[in-house]
Image 1 (cartoon, one colour):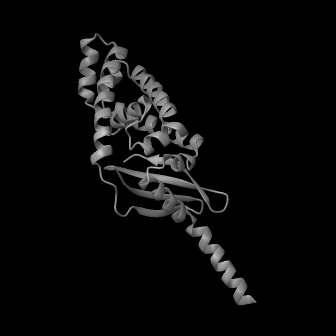
Image 2 (image 1 turned 45 degrees about the vertical axis):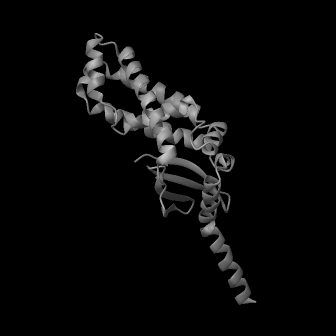
Length: 217
């Protein structure tokens, strides 16, 4: 009887600690089969949107701080414009409908907010030429709104083309890395269509897991 109880306990512990791997197996199968709905259902949208906004706003602040001249010509306006852009892009892109459509179409049906999110991702990742932004502000007599609008419009168009190309040609990691970040927290890191990402999952109940954050490189 003791051996039986020990076996049951061992199985229960195995299921408890092995559950994120099974969830990832299901998500990988859905991704390979372009079943976007399964992935859309595996997201905690409240936490994911909040975490993405906080991460992008912090990184945007750090990017702007690298250019003292921007502060001189209206750093607060730049930050306010960037925060508004981040808010709109995240809210528009991180929805069940858009996630399902984007995965199922391999990025071909991504909405405009997804392209804007890719653009702001490029900004905080240092891909935008901030020197051109400063020059644009100077040429327009310090008009922050016009300079930012022009730069972001150009960047959204460029990122739209890059996202479409990456969806067709980018490679996925053969073997992502996994790690617990707490008893109810699990990270998986790897490349998705050539983009390095770390996805954080949180336990929901005993064995169910939801995606709550995507860490930028």
